[in-house]
Image (cartoon, rainbow, N blue to C red; front, side, top):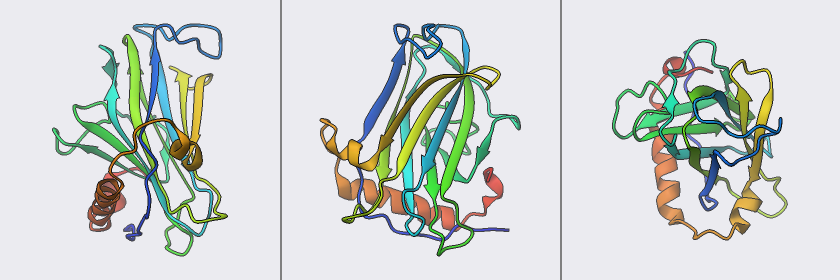
Length: 204
């Protein structure tokens, strides 16, 4: 069995809220529609193979919609953790207090992964939103990581919506910055717990 080594992350960009509602126009010209099934896709790409990073996704809101349970057909790869403050063990990112952490492991710490990807379906309500934080040591000259959220049709064959965010853009966002120390401490604590668990409980 593989275990994930602990790595430290030195900084956190301000939390950014991604939100769609029933007035949001999608790429095919349709609106984000109540009762329609979509696939939410979350992806983290490392800017540097030599450094680790993570994206923390919290505060999922479905606006009266319905989160569908994860199945074997949901595409996912790389390292990730599903969490919940209310349900243990969580069965979905849509459960109350649900969260998703995408993790990139530097190449010096096998088994490494420079990309993490996770998908899960839902039936749309009046809105869809979540908060995302990117953690990374942004030393001068380092290439920024990129987080991407994509929305697909129910068959996962057509891209309907996409938004991308990197560490630099997040740090420049006009949003009150959270307590950096607390954010990093939480990230390191989560990774410490991850280190003690095998990957068997999550898809890789």
